[in-house]
Amino acid sequence: MKKLDGIKAIIFDLGGVILNIDYQRTVVEFEKLGVPHFGEIFSQFKQSSFTDDFEIGKISENDFYETVKAKTEVDFSFSEFCAAWNAMLLDLPPQRIEILKKLSEQYRLFLFSNTNETHYNKFITKVESDFDILFEKTYYSHQFGLRKPDKFAFQTLLERNNLVAEETLFIDDSYQHIESANSLGIRTLLIQEKPFFELLDLK
Image (cartoon, rainbow, N blue to C red; front, side, top):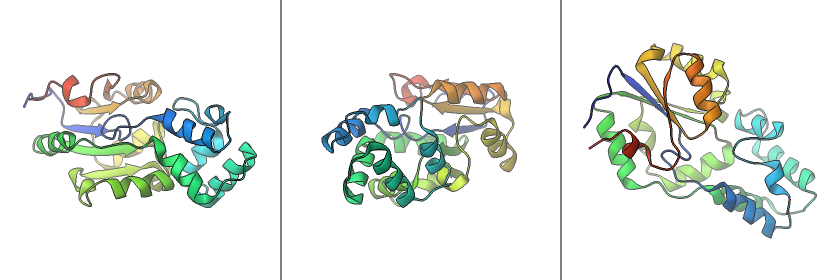
């Protein structure tokens, strides 16, 4: 396996990096429920403030559900909401798990994901129970109380784990998150078309 020069720790994003996701599927499912403008409420790059609050655990799952109903003015059930909201979550290819296991032999691995209670509950049913032990520490934003691209979130993660920014690689699929990490001196890798293990040239 190729060694990353000067890197001692790697912080991974989850959705779009390790877990395959498709935001458009959630938009389509809400359209089926009668919400043609749902894409204006939630998108990958620009979220409404109540979605941000949900991602840092500031509001409950039920509060978020009720707020979505109020904003969309459509009366769908909680189970319909969960199914549509979770539609974006796809598969986690087994080979990525194997790559993480190999990486853990050489690097300290961390997970930092902007997520929420509904997505998290669905995600843990998709993966093996020992997923989190692939990492030294996992930071799910709704539990952490902080989310990307907040610089304080990155700084907190570095300080709590005695990480040196210049010796840390952050891998994410959102430019604004990469930019924030870069501003603290963290080395970064933006995932776009290819999966992380191809970009890292890991054999």
